[in-house]
Structures are given as structure tokens and as C-alpha cells.
Amino acid sequence: MKIKNKAILALEDGTIFKGKSFGAAGETVGEVVFNTSLSGYQEILTDPSYKGQIVTMTNPLIGNYGVNPEDVESRRPFVEGFIVKECSRISSSWRSTLTLDEYLKENNIIGIQGIDTRALTKHIRIQGALKGVISTEDTDTESLIQKARASESLVGKDLVKEVSCGKPYEWNELKSNTKKYNVAVLDLGVKYNILRKLEEHNCKVTVFPAATGADDILKQNPDGILLSNGPGDPEGILYVVENVKKLIGKKPVFGICMGHHMITMALGGKMFKLKFGHHGGNHPVKDLKTGRISVSVQNHGFCCDINSLGSDKIEITHINLNDNTLEGIRHKELPLFSVQFHPEASPGPHDTDYLFSDFVRMMDERR
Image 1: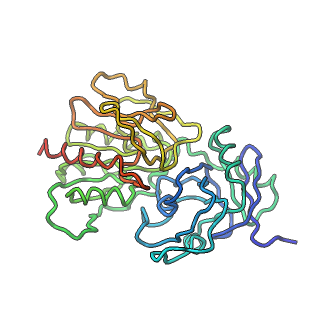
Image 2: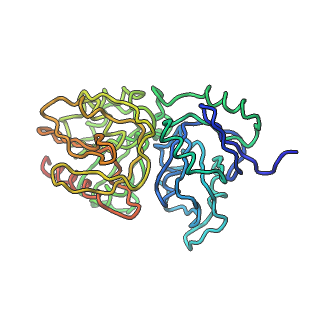
Image 3: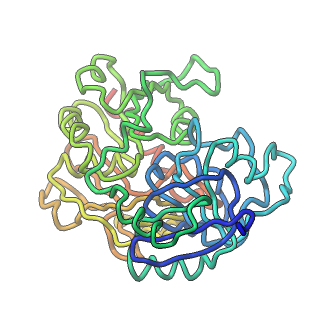
């Protein structure tokens, strides 16, 4: 007899977790990662950088304040699946319009709850990020393991084309026509809060698809260019790297997360895949110039080898204190800097918001 609401998570190494389904029914595959944020699940679900991944939340209770239409980071959820210890049945917030379960159903996202997310997280930390499948339909564990093993890897895959906008558009949430700076944003999977932060810093924002050529951006004569976050393997979008090479030195450029990857690769940096990635809202980052330690939001599975940036014109500005990986650079001669973390995100601390002011200052100096 079939058990109602049964769901199974199978990993490519043969590990099985059995739980209960919530959200949509069906089957989904992706790279299984974990996120250490205590809240912000709606922002995580709608972050385009999670395209291709199944996200495990380490906080044991998720969904307790529901979902609302204001806190989304993109046009829809992009995660392939969602794993929690317990999905709250109650939405205790006056802003909530849907429960988490209803929201996932509405957007056809498959979830599994009732499994030991601590054991799953420890397993990923030891084995590394693994391909996996969540199913509410197939109860044959051997079949599911084979499906996980046969699923596509993120390595070398262009996921940016699946999340980027289809045509240029202007972001004008504040409905103001008196902004001082014109900023072109290359949409590699941009989060809305990056656009909000730019607008708050007196920027008129025009968003361009990821494949937009450098000449098409430059003929708009922007005061600055921001390269956004995005999903997957940076080496899967070498066409963006080639365009970034043509933008460097022409205008002030600021890169965030995937945008940071594009800049470091354009400057000769080499990428490598992190064992289990950096995903969460509590990663300590050190500013090497000031010595200040910031609590940062991070979401990336790839990183630039800090030793591959050999030019004496490139200054290392930030490092991750958990593993000493590269978190930020600045060019000593050209108007260019980038960070691996997300300065637009603030799950409590606003420690890294100053980088938007740095970008505005850079544009001011070159107007």
C-alpha cells in the first residue's frame, strides 16, 4: 500500500533519506547543497544563482513567517528542489499571503521534509556537494540512485542563459526620474535587491541580457557597469568573459559573485570548484586594507584560485576567514573592483553595504 505524502531523496553516492513531501508532487534532480541562514528562505528560493541546485536548509524550522510578494529576488523561484527538517504549517506574519507549502505548489517546486537535515549536511561536508533526486513518485531506491548518477553535472554548463532576462529593461521601483548616475547591469541572474540598492544610491538602472555585446552596452554611455550574480560554472559562460575583457578600462566596473568570477577570469584568474560551496548568511570576510571583519551573505560553488592572479596591478582586498579563499579584488590602475559575497543582502547585518557607496564614488571620480 502506498504511503500518503511519501518522498525520497537519493544521492549519487547511494545515500538515501526518506521523508514526507510538501509543495509540488513529482520528481526533480539537481546538485544538493546546504544553506546555513536562519531566515530568508523566500529570498533563497527566488535567487537565480540556485538554478540547477536542490537546497537544504540547516535551520530546523522553515516557513514560520510564510511568503509575501514583496520579498522575492527574481520573477520566480529557481531552486530545483527544497529540503527542510520541518515545514511550518502556520504563517505567523501579517505580511504573509501564502504558506511556504502553498507557494511551492503554486510554483511547481518539489519539497521534502521530515529528514535529518543535520546528518545530510554533515554528509555533504564530508563527501562534497552531490547530485541528487527528490521523488514523490518512484519508490525504488536503486532506480532513484541511478537517476541521480545519470543527471547532468553543473560543471561546464551554461545556466546563466536560463535565468537572464530576454531583453533590456529599466528598473524604476522608486518611480523617480532625477537619478544622477546611469548604470548598466549585465544580468547573469541578477537579484532584485542589487537593483534596489543601486536605485537607493541615486542610480538610474538599465538591465541587459547576459549575452549583450560590450559595444552595445558602451554605446549607451553608462557612468558605470555592474556585473551581477548568477548560477553554475563560470567556465560555462566564456562568451561573457570575452565581453568583460572589452569593458574593462572603458567604464567603472563592479562585479558581484558571478560578476566577480567574470572579472577575475578576464584578468587571467583560474577557477576551481569548492567542495561544498559557500551558501548562507553568516560567512566572515576580512577586508585586508582596514582589517575589518564583516558578516556576509554568500552563494557560490566555484572560486578563483587566489594564486592565479599574478599581476602586480591586482590588489587582493577580501578573504574568507573560514577557508582563506578569495573574496574580493581591486585593480590598482583601472576603475574596477569585485567581491565574491553579496553586499546587497542583509539577513540582519548590513556590514558590506558600503561597497555600493564605493561604486558611486568611483563613478563620481570619472564623470
